Every structure is written in structure tokens, then in C-alpha cells.
Image (cartoon, rainbow, N blue to C red; front, side, top):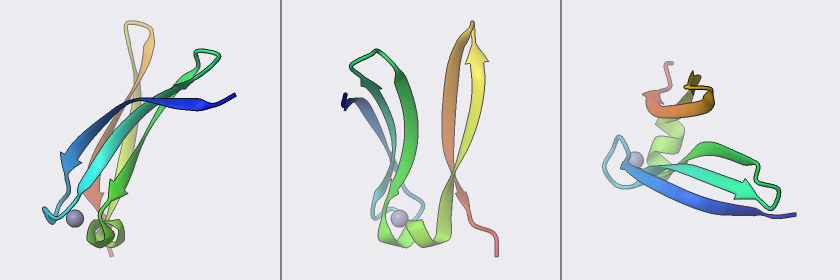
Length: 71
Ligand SMILES: [Zn+2]
């Protein structure tokens, strides 16, 4: 069983030097999931991903945004 990446949507990160990505992937059994990751050494330290899970006409949806880590 292996996960395969279906899509990767890149967003510019907060400092502008890297990206944060939304990734959707599915496995051989048609399960799918999504997650987001920060691909920037600077923003990894100063920001985190906030996930919002909801439903759209019965389909689970996830949306992500980059938020500053409050000190
Ligand atoms: Zn950055």
C-alpha cells in the first residue's frame, strides 16, 4: 500500500523566499487525505499551518492557511 500525491498547490510564504504547499494524496484503496507543509526555513520558525475542516455537500473538505506563531 502506498500513498500517491495527487496535487500540490504552492502558495508564497510570508517572507517571500519560499512556499507553503497544500498536498492532496490518495492510496491504492482510494482513500484520500490532504495536509499542508511549510517549505521555508524562515517561516517554519515563525509560522504554522492552521487547518480548518468542514463539509461541502457531504464531502469532507480541508482548508489551510499560514498563521504567525504568537509569542
Ligand atoms: Zn518564508
